[in-house]
Amino acid sequence: MYGVLVIGAPGAGKSTFCAGLTDIFTQTERPFLTINLDPANDTMAYQPDVNITELITVNDVMDRLGLGPNGALKYCIETLGKNSEWLLQKIEANGKKYIIVDCPGQLELYKSEGELWQVIRHLEKAGVRLCALHLADSLYCSDPSKFISVALSTLATMVTMEMPQVNCLSKADLFSADGTYDLDFFSYLPDVNKLLDLLNEVPGLEKYRKLNESICGVISDFDLVSFVPLAVESKESMMKVIQMVDAANGFSLTEQGDIRELILNSKS
Amino acid sequence: MPSSSTTPLVSKDQETPVGPNVDQKPSVLVLGMAGSGKTTFVQRLTAFLHARKTPPYVINLDPAVSKVPYPVNVDIRDTVKYKEVMKEFGMGPNGAIMTCLNLMCTRFDQVIELINKRSEEYSVCLLDTPGQIEAFTWSASGSIITDSLASSHPTVVMYIVDSARATNPTTFMSNMLYACSILYRTKLPFIVVFNKSDIVKPTFALKWMQDFERFDEALEDARSSYMNDLSRSLSLVLDEFYCGLKTVCVSSATGEGFEDVMTAIAESVEARKKQMDEEDKKKREQEALKGKAVHDLNKKKAQEGDDEDLEDDLNSKVDRIHLGGVEEENDEDAEIERAV
Image 1 (cartoon, rainbow over the protein chains, first blue to last red):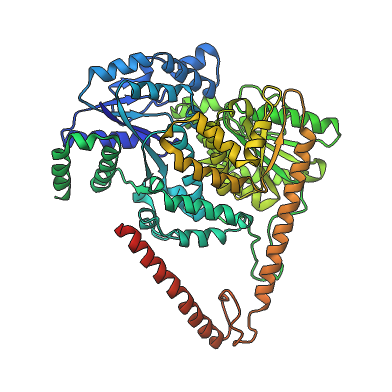
Image 2 (image 1 turned 180 degrees about the horizontal axis):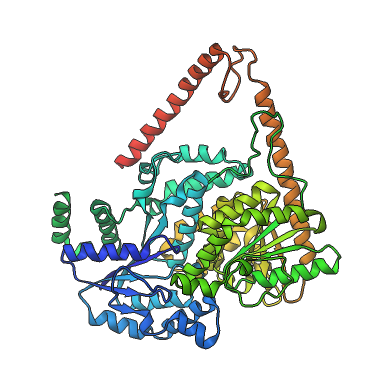
């Protein structure tokens, strides 16, 4: 069983991406199973096959227990934690399907040893091979310091998730060409020298030269933290991301014939 | 959106820069994860300051809080009603919080005016932010609010950490990375507050921050082998972050540590003031060097908007020589790494 966990800040475009993914999988005839784990997600562009709202909804909790939105969200995730068997059963019943999991955006839920973390570990132990796909809004990368900010929060999630992770900058089609650098920069991250220069010029960050250097060092040393621009409307962009995810969770090793055809088809 | 709003804006007809009023009382943006204790912190700090007869000006920016346990001067809930927004716009809880913030943002200039007007009457301005940290740090309205504050008067970010929940080294590292991320986003003086010291003494955190080896050991014991190298590199990154980072250990429940809070705020504001003065000096020196001897090629940066053509020409030639080399080198390096 293979799948992708779509994570990222609220508003980054997770649900939109999941909807786009379902379109592509329908076109390429890859059987899939969509799971929505965000209890606060009401209006989605796709119909999830498995939904946490079957278990519990945020509004119910807020009404019945008088909790605020954060408390309600935490309560819902705790409920999910107690019912991870239910989730696993649903997945196992659809064994051959590729799993797409739409996750909640709140950072507080992604604590090491937290409920969500334990659900994921539970699934992994049962043999579900997952890859995390982290979406960050590319509009937040309009200048060097914001880009570093995005990179750092991505790193924070990578450290917590402890699983293969592909990092994407979503809404790449909206990114304007008159930023300090264009979008290609992200795919060719080795050029950290330029980034470092730009960072050292930012007012407010003067005393952090050494920090700038070490962060840029990590970015250049570890390909793990390179970002892939993603535009959900662009088939080419989506295919690239799907390839990376398949390579990360091992799916590409089982279905190699498909991938080649898909690439050829996508070129037409 | 101005990204460099903390730089003093140089007005065209004046010599002196027009920028944040550095003599005004500072504003403190209280940020932190949901449940870290921001509201309780603001409550305790307010009580502390009232007891010392140096009251603060308090602003609540959390639209979804049911009860505000401190005397508040400006409350976002007066401007926008959270539950009504949910109904009227048919939004879920997150969407409603963002919308409330957005609506508040359109009026925020009025809030700034109020803060400035009342500056003489209070010692510090405190801003309590929404429970979910992303609503503030990853939203346009959060940025606008932060930038407007920073460009008006000295602003400091206080990042509250739940010490009781940070004992796991992976969580701690993740939390600190996130704090660093906020630093890069706001570019403001940063203070980390270890809250709930009555439950767990945050000395473990201070030890980890001072001694990289100890943290590394704790990390190795606690986590899986998946991210060994990356975790170690990240700990080194964080090591740099910790240098010169102000930390305070408090308990909002018992009131312990709040004297240090005020000291930390005052020190951060002083340090930033000094830094900005130095920047001003540098800028003024550079401006004064405009139009000086053209053959003085020891000038490091190219002057902008030169009057004399020759100087312009020469400087641009100097630029071309310098940048051409470095950029070509970078391209070559990038090529090599791409090929690998």
